[in-house]
Length: 639
Image 1 (cartoon, helix red, strand yellow):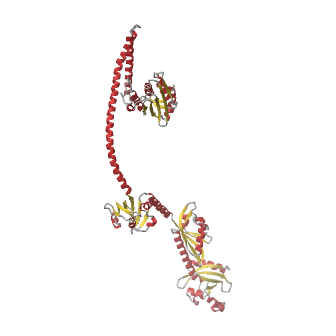
Image 2: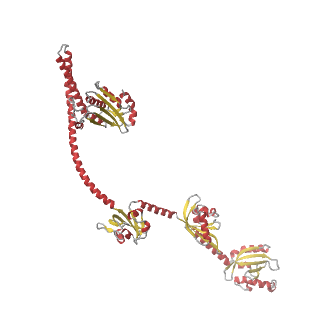
């Protein structure tokens, strides 16, 4: 069939229609050669009407598409219609155009296929650019330091970037569809409604603080900003930009802590900017100067504290500090009420991150009290000097007493030696008198008998004097044990010869115990009771009482004898002082030495003509020792 005849197959009306549409229209024979091509197709390839006839359609394709295209077209020749077949067409200049073809079989004499194509080259390029832009945007969002989320109008998450996924601990799939209130706990119902109503108006909500609850239940502090998302002028959702402020919160907490610490110090701490304006004013500064922090912030510091030289010292200028870096000195400052006060001021630069000064710090200490204390110290030193002089005189007196005590100790040693030296001859004399007395007949004269009796009494008296001398010379005590004082005192009483006109009452409670050398403490009470008996020649009563507390034990010996004169009372414990005609003056000194050796003390109260009370005080017994030895005390000291 000739070309002209084939063209008649298509009506002139159809050709006119096909020439007007922006669609590629082709007719192919069974050999896949072009029988007809629309004007749009020709313009797209840059060829004229005569160039396409008998051209194989596959020759217009790049090599990579020829095999695939041949298979597709052969299937269509066999009767299979196909949609959206993407094939690239090469233009006359060698460029490629991407065309989406619809292929339909047709059963005509010399026509097998109808191809209708849409040039989508620009669409594909735009789509690829859009995909690249989307990939770039996704990369930017995923690499952002902020957690970025988008939510729909139901407040459910429909996008979250990588930072948001990592921060939350959820997977992206777990986050999508989750209500925003489940993720940001700080956003309560009222706040959610508030920011959505703001978004609907096309405004921005925030910044506001919220806490992100992670998958493991921990909380992270975030600052969020919510902006509306518009599509064709209509709000369809919102984008949430969340910044992790954990580190900032820690820094703020550290700053608050440091400020609180500075508020606890007693010194006034003040800071001024390099322009001289107050930037910090602690609580101590408020108390010292009388200005509240709200009244001084931003004001010139020098106008507030009004420094003046003190003893020739002046406050350095800011320019001077650049060279000095720090300064210390005493100057005079002014309070709010106008009063002046001396102060020690330490000034130093506050350095920034780049090691450049950003402010000046002042530490102010009120010297008023210190100066007052210095005045007091000077007065105290004067008093101390006078006291040292007084104590020096007292020391001299004490030294004299010490010398006297040493003399008394020497006397005691001498007395002990004399006692030992006299005891041997007295023993011999006593033996001789005993033999002489046994040899005398009953007819011996009364004078001889009286002389022998007198010699015996004299020897007994001499032995007692020697015993007292030896007793006084012994300054130490033997091993102590816990004793019941009632039994110990009773044993001492029973060793004495009690006149018939003397009554003795032992009223010491049974539970009064003491840790003592029993034999020596019995000697104390023998002497005290005997002294009371000697003070009542006409008869009377001796009453013994006692008691204890957690610190001490005491026993008193009270009589209603003649008493002691006031002038003699102070000398009663002095060795060799006595008011008795036959006394040696060692009885009470012996008692004193024994009691003091036990860690106690002894005292006398007496009224002339009324009677005398002697009080013996001893340390209280430790509870553990008392329990351990109490049984032995009962066995040895009762009765």
